[in-house]
Length: 248
Length: 246
Image (cartoon, rainbow over all chains, first blue to last red; front, side, top):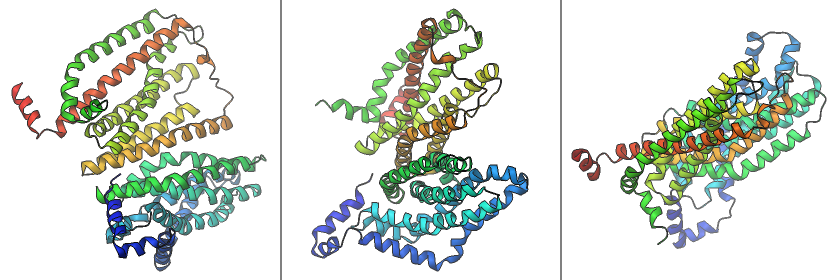
């Protein structure tokens, strides 16, 4: 990883005015990024609904393409909802750092005295709040459309709640790697999708196993474990990738 | 003092000139090992009591799968060395390792499919190992795609090194989850007990083939790295001198 931005931060820390900057608490950068991104998301409400609409439309295509038979759809529902939620997250990820990269505010984040890890975490947290969480809340409705059996709703919401957060975190690495490229969108899906397979496996199977009458807590526990690993590791990798994308 | 060799290896020119002397030996060794191993495995090892001669594909299938997995780690570790010590050659090794690994993964998947047709009666099964190999193949493709997407060489190297390292963390997780997913969905028709025990008369040629593939991998990796070095340093003096001298 390039040490350029860090060295800039160090030289600033020695000057008196930077002394006051570094006295600012550890989380103030996180809070600032969090507030800013949330405000930006609120002001571009049109974009907020795009992943949700995508989710809804693709789920509508499933009965059209396969069959309207409730039994078949009920069988497909857990996997289908999970796969489409994954795709919707992927499509929204391209914009995670893009506008900041284009208007130069990403460079300001890189040279700020706050640890980049926390700044990335702030951006990812907002991304999850405006895509992952709404997708989770919309999922039961789509479950009704696909005749998901009653016992599946609890694990569906719970697994998506934990799973989409991991998806956002892991995806941020891909978004950071491809932010400097003009056509990053498809490449982002290509490099990140294989890394999503464990989450998809445990997420969809928690729903399926609840429908079959088995316990689903072990899958949820594993999803929670994935989330905690991703929470610790993914922002580091994304921060390193951002340095590469911006500084070369 | 002890680290001088490490830094010397980091220099493309030193690496190129040193390995020139090794190449014929590596070539010869890998060809000899491959010929002996395949003759032993294909010609002299006994045929399987249940599968007849079709099992003989393991002499390609298993070594290719071994190297496909090991190759990812070789790629990621050389990427990590490049990021930490900023040696030029390690990135070139990483770049050369990606396509070789992808080809080996494809070979192991392909030979698996060819083997699966006579023994299981189907080309493709969603078996845990097959699926995780397929995901490994996608990971290789991802690293290669990311590499090609950048115009700037330095960023391409660093970005794909990061991706390769992220993949390294993920490979055990993916492998375990797919394993778990498979035991959940296990179809009852197919049993994977054939190769749990292997007779020494088949094991030794197989081990020899694994060693042969390792040497072949080293040879091909070095060849590709040397080509990358020449391509990268084509404007430097020593390459020009070498090109005009020969």
